[in-house]
Image 1 (cartoon, rainbow, N blue to C red):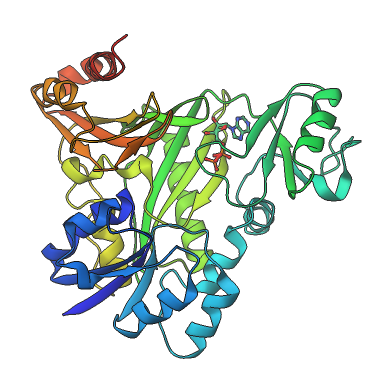
Image 2: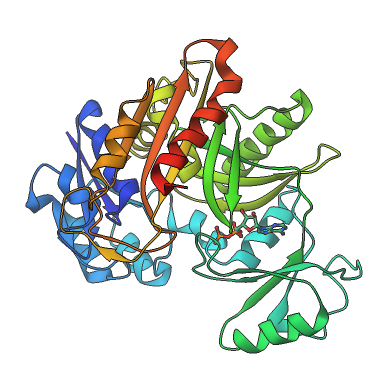
Amino acid sequence: MKRVGVIGGGQLAWMMAAEAAKLELELMVQTPSLSDPAVARLAGEHFVMQGAVGNVAATAHMAASCDVVTFENEFVDLDALGKLATLGHRFYPTLKSLTPLLDKYEQRQLLREVGVPVPGFADLSAVGPGLTHCENGDAVQFPVVVKTRRNGYDGQGTFVVKSLAALEERCEKLAHQSLLVEEFVPFTKELAAIATRNVSGDLAVFPIVETQQEDQVCRRVIAPAHLSTTARDKAVAIAQTLLEKLEGVGTYGIELFLTADDRVLVNEVAPRTHNSGHFTIETCVASQFEQHLRAVADLPLAPAKMIVPAAMMVNLLGFESAEFDAPEGGYGDRLSQIRALPHTQVHWYGKLASRPGRKLAHVTLWTLDSEEIQDLENRAKQIEKIWYKF
Ligand code: ADP
């Protein structure tokens, strides 16, 4: 039996824990609190290493009893973890492969170097708010997108800026942080590629999906995305190139923009399982979490294929600030109504508090009949109506 340690104990580790048993793997998580989601699915409290994601002493303890350590959260202290790697502890993805990904500017540089299309970009800290040209020499045209280079998630560090005055104001507000500025891409769709590469170098890419964001947070995923063959092939090729060049090991989420002329650009690479891959749990031969565990435990990958014609995933986001005093936070009625819908599975993460925009659960819905694919979007709307009560 192999034991896999996971840095992070939120919903991604919770979903990974459900798959570990199937593969006869033991899962241990490093997470600050015994009430974090993943803990409920571990074989016992001795599989929890209590500590924040950045607590390297806790990682050292966990690594000592694990065959391999992987990540639910990539915002880690790579330099400190490097000392553990030199002591012989194994990390997948490797620390070396993570290094260029944690800073959005360095990630853009790497993507450009490996020949993957990205939006025009510049390091705003270097050029300052008087920015007139991108690094490729093109004149800057508003709107632009300003991003904090590190630790951004769910659009928290991402700002669309419409004028030079607004850019100066934004720079002042974010004066203490390193910033990236990039071209605003007038995309027709946002896509995601969920791809896995194992230790032996085998690679599998799940069907490309469409992701729908509102206020920069993912609300829905459509699998597979409705796309031209050219666009689909480009998205798959990008995922393959990236994982090969990075020598990535594990499941990665690659966020993409599709433009009206069928160009596919990379927005962001997440070196971990990803919200846009949750649909795989019910609707693929093996889920993104099973694939991830297979990859890091050096097992053969499963086919990354859907077993139904089409599916959607709907995130259930918090819409109020509340501490929960019941297991389903007082949302039991809404969840029961959703659970009663056909071909629908609710995943309630078991968090103890809600705040607006926080991911509390997701719902996967699917069709067994290809004639009903159009219906999926209406079913997704029905679920959102029940959840948000609009
Ligand atoms: P995070 O890393 O916090 O998830 P992202 O960089 O992925 O933030 O941005 C969140 C959302 O903002 C994207 O899904 C997209 O809708 C929008 N966005 C980000 N970058 C651009 C861009 N260059 N052009 C247009 N929209 C963008």
